Amino acid sequence: MSALLEIRQLDKHFGGLHVLKQFNMTLQAGEIVGILGPNGAGKTTLFNLLTGFIPADSGEVMLHGTSIRQMKANAIVGMGMARTFQLCRPFVGLTVLENVLVGSLGPRVKHHDLGERAMHLLSQVGLADKAQQASELLSYGDLRRLEIARALATEPELLLLDEPFAGLGSAEIEALSALIRQLHQQQHLTILLIEHKLREFMQLVSRVVAIDFGEIIAEGSPSEIVNHPRVIEAYIGRQNPLNMDQHA
Image (cartoon, rainbow, N blue to C red; front, side, top):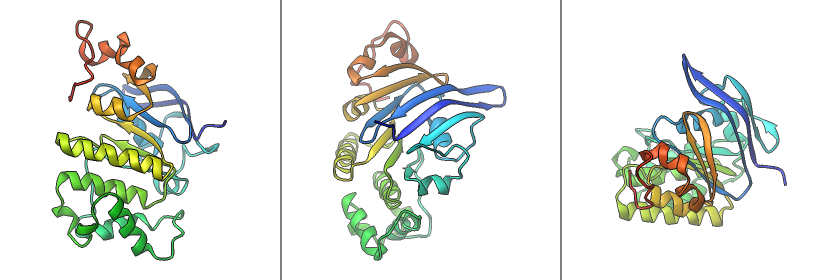
C-alpha cells in the first residue's frame, strides 16, 4: 500500500543551525502518528516545511504520490493537508462562524451551502452556540476548537496538530482529546500530532516518531518509545525514567 505522506531526506538550515537533518518518514492513511521531542528538536520546523510556510533546502515531500515540496501553502491545502498552530491565530474582527467560512474557500470544498457546512463543523467541535461571537473573545480552549474547525473546513485528508493541548487545563485536555479521536473515526482523518503533554500524547497516538536535534532517534509504539533509552536521555537525562504522567 502506498503511503499517504512520504518524506525523503528532508533537510533545513537556519544560517549555521542545522535544524532538520536528512529526515525520512512515511504516514499511512488512517494513522494517528505523534512527533515527540524536546524543545528545539525540529518538530514545528517539520510542520512548517510540510505545509509550505518555509522552503526546505533539499529533499522531497510526497502527498498521494505527488511532490508538494515546492508548492505554496494554499496549494498544499488544496492537495488535502491542513494544520493548526502552536499559538492560536483567529482572524480578529471576524465572528467564529466567519472564521470557519474562510477555511471553506479552498478548492477542495464542493458544498453549495457553505454556511450550513460551517455551522455543522462548529457543532462538531462544540462551538455552535458561539457562532456569532467575535473570535477574539473566545476562551483559549475554545480558540483551540475553532482552529480545528477552521482546518476541517478545508476538507483535509491529513490534519497536522501543533500542540493542541498547550495552555489547557486537565478537563479541557480530556475533552479535546476525545474530540480528536471522534473526528479521526468519523471523518476518516489521518493525523500527525506534536504535543508535550506526554500522558495524553501517548494515549492518543498509535505510533511515535521521536526526534532530537533534527534527527529521528526512535520510532515505534507508545510503549516502546516511553522506555527507549535515547528518548529518555533526550527528554530528561540518563538518570530519570520517562514518566507517562509527565505534563511538561
